[in-house]
Image (cartoon, rainbow, N blue to C red):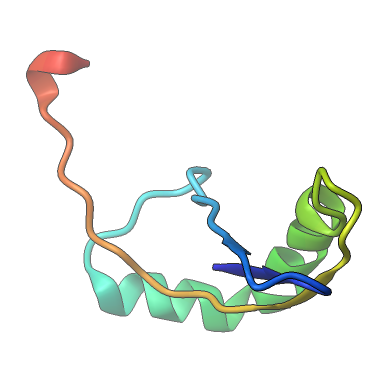
Length: 71
């Protein structure tokens, strides 16, 4: 989740570079790789398309099911 300076709106982005076997594995990955994740987050989302700077963010793990017949 992304929050930008000077606006009440928030953004949302998915990290799709890696898949995890459960929430615990995801949380461990965030903990172990936080510096790299934050660097990438700022590189990609540091400035919103309307010019607002990224003020704060939150990492969380979310389960998504993929229908393999659609792949």
